[in-house]
Figure 1 (cartoon, helix red, strand yellow):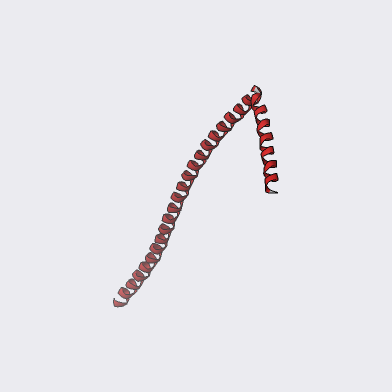
Figure 2 (figure 1 turned 90 degrees about the vertical axis):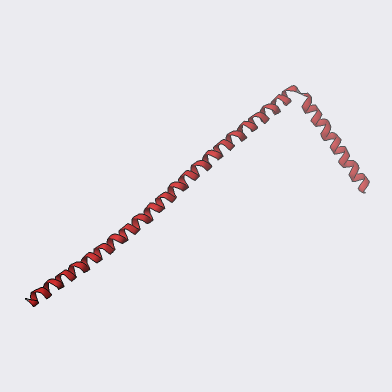
Length: 107
């Protein structure tokens, strides 16, 4: 059984090889295959170039996003500092009012 299936596989291989030889004997088929291969290489090169450009742009945008995040955090901290300054200014005004009242009482 194994011997007969092996013979069939060998016969298929020989038939396939014969068909391949016939195809390769035709000059047009070789030219078509060569052109397809060249176009495939060109397409591959173009895709690589596009991929590198997209990767570069992605890195640029990530850097810009990171810079914006830093600016946002800095602005938030400045706003917090301004709020603290307003609170301290208000406390100072209250203390000055208290001081003025005490001075008036002492007179």
